[in-house]
Length: 70
Image 1 (cartoon, rainbow, N blue to C red):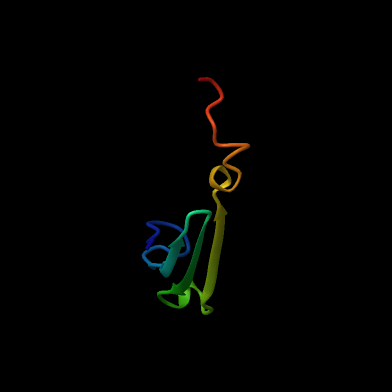
Image 2: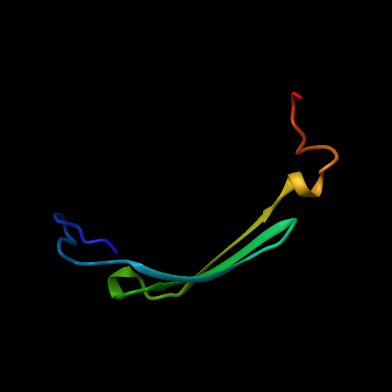
């Protein structure tokens, strides 16, 4: 939430509510969230954000993920 103190939008609160889930596995992580505006000034449409992370150290454990120096 954000409320500017000066300027054309002074005193008008804007913001979003972000609801989501994250799944974590051994080799990857997947997250999805919905972005819901709290009022008209925050927007009219619902957004979606997704992320996918690969754990390269686990996937290529024989090539990377080892110490550089022993």
